[in-house]
Amino acid sequence: MANVAALPILLKELHLGAMARQWEVLQDEALANHWTLAHYLTVLCENEVAHRHTQRLQRYRQESHLPAAKTLSQFDFGACPQANSTQLAQLAHNADWVERADNLLLFGPSGVGKTHLAAAIGHGLIEQGQRVYFTPTTQLVQQLQVAKRELKLPEALARLDKYEALILDDIAYVKKTEMETSALFELIAHRYESGSLIITSNQPFSEWDSIFSDNMMTVAAIDRLVHHAQIIEIQGESYRKMQSLRRKKQG
Ligand code: ADP
Ligand code: MG
Image (cartoon, rainbow, N blue to C red; front, top):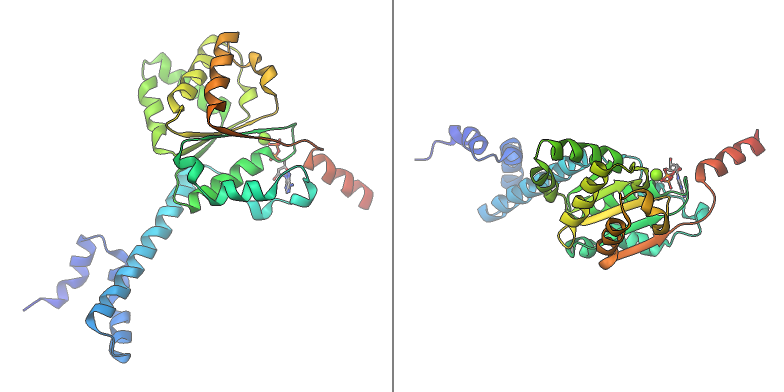
């Protein structure tokens, strides 16, 4: 004879949290509606799976460091006619390119929405079950530089492997010192054909000599980045500037 009183403990031991919370309420529903035992069990399992899915997405969102409000629905495409909404929605809602470890490069002057769009794509990818990490490039490069100094760069790079997409915001802000740029180069080489990079830059490739220590490294980095990549250029006025002009007009 099974000890039904032990069920809550058994469910807890099996880490079936949603089931532990719901089995009694659903049992009443099952009896009231004459569900078969298999029907009852299926509903319990479905709820457990749905609960885990929600929790996983929550965890992915938290670890991503993505700015929460920067989503595609918050992006005003009317204010940015340069941006191809279909292409951007496709990038956010279909993760095939991330599964292929392709890259995405967003270019354009300051304030046109590059960071917002990169983050919005990141949010979309998380919804598709991908793990994403958003970071100002300088911050990550500094961390990698410390790791390199401690001879732990391979481990630091490997720790990033769990993220299918790594968003490097403002790559052109990286200062040109030998150690920093070689850590950045090693990151790019490490991710090549194994994990996606989403990069924003207010400097075109022709100016990237100021990021990497020598011309050969610049060429080698760009070569790896663009081999499997989509490149989006956004021109136009700074959104911040347009908004402050509009406020002045209204005021
Ligand atoms: P960039 O990274 O190109 O310098 P940001 O993405 O940081 O620009 O955009 C600057 C600010 O303006 C952010 O707060 C961003 O959310 C907002 N913004 C830019 N473009 C748009 C847009 N088309 N619709 C809504 N908000 C926008
Ligand atoms: Mg930005």
